[in-house]
Length: 282
Image (cartoon, rainbow, N blue to C red; front, side):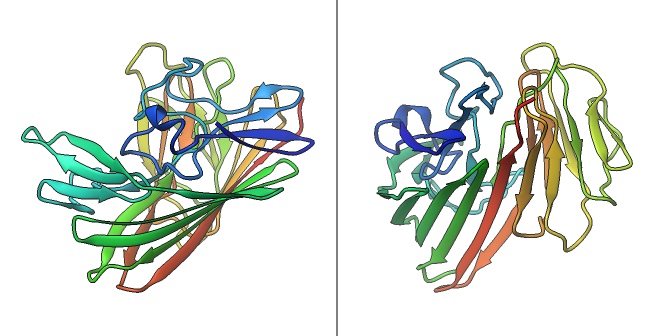
């Protein structure tokens, strides 16, 4: 593991080499925050099978981020026939059963500083070429994740990116305040009254979960305030207006997933960030 710490918190980040067994094609390898520890209250993040210490790479935990090589409905973004690339993860191969495997991880340069870590990679595969810079900052009780993506290829780079933070539950439930004007379709797992999301019921068994696509006020950056079992609150926000925003929960965790649609022309660079502020202990 890599670490970043101050007088308030300690961050555990996956090392792209030493912790490769924990990673796969789903999440970006550089800047993967695996856990945040409060010096008094212990670990502050969860995951789909937390506290299992060995979740699958697909499940993961903490504050992972993902560049999708496929859309949720199966459209190809960065796959071309039997080859492709997962931005920030590596070269992909597709077998006859359409299973996608990571065959060659991208190589990262890591630069440590007193209050942040920088991760840099550049890769060409399946007709795509890109450069990715990730910076994870820790200031007091705030974690900021910055991303810079440049298309060095000869064709547009079209894909989706999203953070997948895993926040813990309290007694099998959570409560989260979204921006005014947020909407949600009727579903059996979550309720939304005014701007506050709650669980209708605890999720109890493996596979018992809920996924819902929220409607957010157009053109506005996202800011969500969540309950936490040992803090007075957690504040999660983006530097961009999400193009869409699923939410997901199961018996172990709750996630807010603001999507960003990316369409980079050759030579174009895009910057964005997300921020998680962990409140004071209760």
